[in-house]
Amino acid sequence: MATEARAPTSIRRTLWLYLGGLMALFAVALFFGARDYGQRAANRSYDHLLVSSALSIIDSVALVDAQWQVDLPYASLDLLAMAPEDRVFYRVFDARNQTVTGYGDLPAPPRAPSDRPQLFDAPYSGETVRFVVVSRRVSSPSAQAEVRVQVGQTRRAREALAQDMVTRALVAIVVLSLLSLALVALGVHRALRPLVRVERELSRREPSDLRPLDAATPQEMDQMVGALNHFMGRLSTSNETLRAFMAEAAHQMRTPLAALRAQAQLALDDEDPEDMRRSLQAIERNATHMSRLLNQLLSDASVIHRANLQRFALVDLAEIVHQALHEALPQALPAPRVQLAVTSDPAWVNGDALLLREAIKNLIDNALKYGGDGVLQLALTTDDSHCVLTIADHGPGIAAADAERVFERFARGEGAAAGGAGLGLAIVKRVVDSHGGHIDLANRVGGGLVATIRLPRRHA
Image 1 (cartoon, helix red, strand yellow):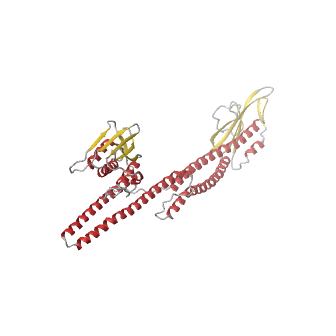
Image 2 (tube, rainbow, N blue to C red; image 1 turned 60 degrees about the vertical axis):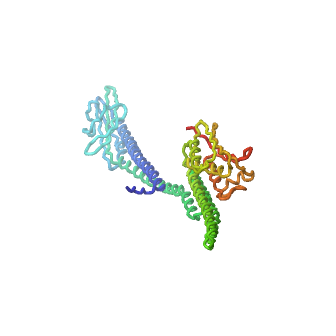
Image 3 (cartoon, rainbow, N blue to C red; image 1 turned 90 degrees about the vertical axis):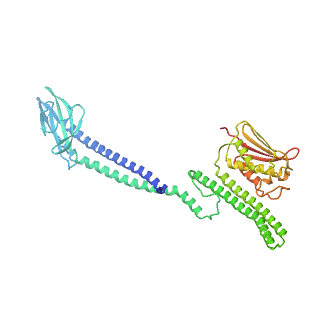
């Protein structure tokens, strides 16, 4: 079943989504906060006027001969008349709820009046009215009684004031939000500008230009740019290796191909059967040499590829040595004499079993080819941190000048037998290096060459 292609994500859209959502939540919170503040501020202002008016009226109440007298100060009601769209109601009454003056049907307060002003909302005359009730004990030479004053005002003015405050706050919030959005847009643009610079620098390059990026980037992009530079460095190294491999392979193949053509032409021109047979034998030798060269070239390419992949696992080096020895020994008689000594301790290494087996086979093949008729000796030992494999022969050894040069590709030591491609030890060196190990060649006392491989040891 074909999987649906996922739409590519956008950093810009993601930033806008999160920052825009945060700003929207902030704006909504500001709006509700402003509305609550506006309502409380309007209530405080008009409640102060209500209380002042009620206290002004209660100051005008006197008790004369057990009778209440009210000299209503109309200036107290004028304070509330500052809101012309509102209506004002008042009532003066005693502790027995008997009305002295004013509107006798005003709603009673929810609690008994006390020394402190009591504010409450109640429906009256078809709309919600804000009331205040104040109480005071009045004394005269002949009597003492409690008087109460209730003043109410409709809520139109205070609601209009609260709405005006909310509207002004909303305008400020909108302006602030627009400025914040502009700042976010600028910030997103500047934050993404380094990515644009990197994209432009890469798009202007030639395909073969794998130099490290030198564009100025913020700290948050250091790891990405470093990883990209590391990748381009690996790619550049791989390309250089591939170009060198192709050039050297073409150079190495040119000579046997030219020889094959010349010998084939010579065979075509020969009329003597013996001369023709000799030419065909020479063609067969060159074809065998070219076949061996092609096999080693393919092996070298495979080693390069697998070494770059670094798909390593825990493997038993002793088992790999046995496999390599079995595959490298010729099946035809007489069989070469071999001495194998393998430690009983675990010899685990972290690596690629195929690469390690190929490297050991190349060393055994070299030892069989150049080691003379003596015994081929293999020994695998371990210490605390390394697994050590030695392969010793009884051949002519190696010149000191060639001890390092023979690890180069297509390089061969002095006195090397004809027919080799010069890739075997280069393959071994590449495999050992990719596993973090070390290889060296040394002449043994009494004649012969000792190849020693040291690989980091792992514990299962």
